[in-house]
Length: 92
Image (cartoon, rainbow, N blue to C red; front, side, top):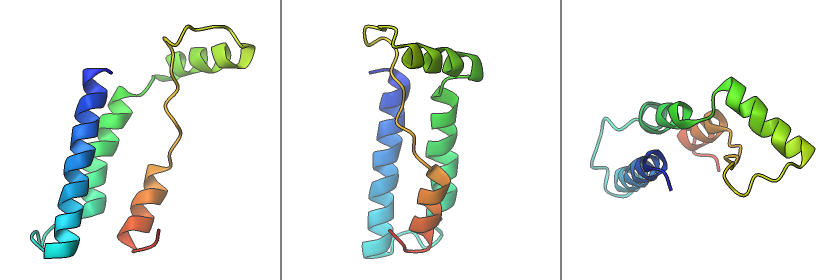
């Protein structure tokens, strides 16, 4: 695991803990989950993501079925904006 993924994981866990504490104990009255998600998690994830040219190479390797011996892993796609909006509005 790369150090970037580890940091992203720790930040996600910390944000999840803060969200639970906010919902259960109402510790942080100024807590804004969507802002925190965007500022702390999404921006870091975008910085760690493949650039456009590398993404195109990975996409082509997968499309052609070229063996990559596990050195190329595509991150699962996830709609961060939709998740943040549904969490902020209380939907799941």
